[in-house]
Length: 427
Ligand code: HAM
Image 1 (cartoon, rainbow, N blue to C red):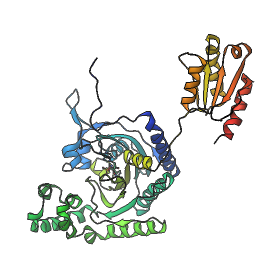
Image 2 (image 1 turned 45 degrees about the vertical axis):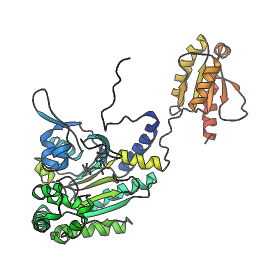
Image 3 (image 1 turned 90 degrees about the horizontal axis):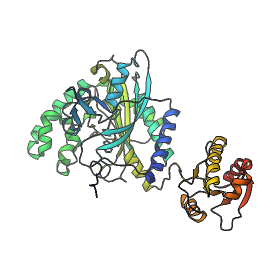
Image 4 (image 1 turned 90 degrees about the vertical axis):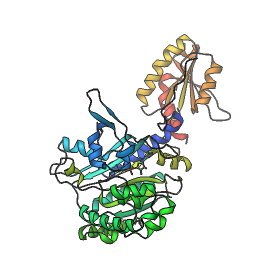
C-alpha cells in the first residue's frame, strides 16, 4: 500500500460532522455584524513580511518566532498572515478607504502561527475580526464590546468575562516603561530567563507572564493605569461609563498588555474558565498610530478578533447544534426508467421549493438497500419512484419517522404542496 500522508501538525481538518456547528456560528456572527452595519472585506492570506514586522512589532513573540515566512520565487520575503489587522489596514490605505470617511469592516478566515500546538492553540486557526476606522471617541470602543457581548448572548455563551485595561498614549507608555524597567531591575534576581530577555526588548510583556514564580514581582509592579496621560484617562473613564450604561460587566485588569505592539489606550479580552489554559476567546483594542505608521493618514483604529476554534469548543460543550444539514427528503428510484425521471423530478422540486433539503439516491440498488440509506440519512420523508410510478407519472410518499406510517401515491405535481404542508407540521 502507498504511504499515507497526514495533515501538518497543528493544522486541522474540519470534518463534515463538525461543520454544522461552524456554519451555525459563522452565520450568527455574520448576522450580528450586519446588525451593527459592518461590511466584509476579504484579504489575501499572504502579505509581505515587512507588513507584519512593522505593525505587530519586531520584538513580539509572533514576529520573532511564530511566523510562517518564506522567500517567493523572486526572492521577496512573504509571510502567511498571523492575524488580520495588519492586512486590513494595508488594504484600506492601498484602496483609499480611509480618506475623510469612517469605516466599519470585518473579515474571517485562517491565520497561521508557528506555536506549540495544544488544546485551543493551533498553527492554522480561524478568526473573525472587526475593525473600525476614523473614530476617536470611546463610543466606538464601546460599540465593538457591545457587539461581541451580543454575540455571546445570541450563542448562549454565559461563562465569559470581559477584561479591560488602558495602555495610554505611546508617550505615556514610554515613560511607564522606564519606571517598570527600573523596578524590574531592582528585582532582577527573581526574574526568569524569558523575562530577563524581555527586560531589554519588550518589558511590558513581562506583566503578561504566566510563570507562577513571577506572580509576586508582577503584582507589586507599578501599574500602568496609574501613569496614564490625561487624554487616555478621560477616554477610559468615558468608556467605563458607556459600558455601565449598556449593562456590560467588566473587570479592570491593569496587567493586560496584549502580545502585539500596535495598541494604545483601550485593550480588552473576553476570557472563559471553561477551556483550560487557552481561555481567551476574543481580544482587541485601539491602535491609533498604526495607520500612519504603515504610510496612511493619521486615522484612528480600533477592533478585535475572536478565535473560532475556541468558540466552537465552547459551543460543542454547551450542546449547540448549529445549522442542520440533515436532508428532509430522500428520493428513492429503482429501475432505469425511474432513475431517469428521478433526477428530473428532484430538479423540479428544487426549483419549486428552493430551501428544501433533498437528497437523491445515486448509485442504483434495490428498494431495500435504498430504504436503508433513506433511513440512515435522517430524512423525514422518502419519495419513491419505481417502475409503476415512472410509467404513470406518480410518486409514492412515505413518512420515515412515524411508527405506523402509510405510504400514499401522489401525482408528481402534487408533491410540492404535500411537502410544503408536511414539513411545516414536522418540528
Ligand atoms: P490575538 O490576541 O493575537 O489578536 O488573537 C485574537 C484571538 O485569536 C485570540 O483571543 C484567540 O481566541 C485566537 N487565537 C490566537 N492565536 C491562536 C491560536 N494559535 N490558536 C487558536 N486561536 C488563536 C489579534 O490577532 C489581533 N489582530 C486582534 C485585533 C483586531 N486587535 C485589533 N483588531
